[in-house]
Amino acid sequence: MKIIIKLNSILEERGISRREFARMTGIRHPTINEMCKNQTKRIPLDNLAVICEILNVNIQDVLELVNIDE
Image (cartoon, rainbow, N blue to C red; front, side, top):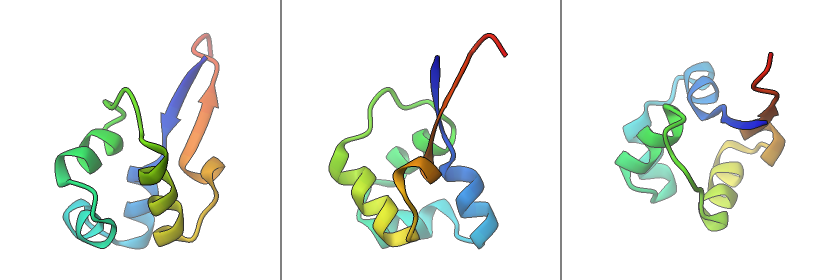
């Protein structure tokens, strides 16, 4: 199993740039980039909470658990 971060697709759907989203959330731009590229190894819970609050989404809208055998 693997966790996929769907932040990039959400931002693209809403027309929000990564840099703008970093300003909106107070999360560093490089951290947002890593999340959008699924290159991050951990997401602090407070960052996840801010992302969900700003985008008005649930955690499962941002994170997806997928079977890597698919």
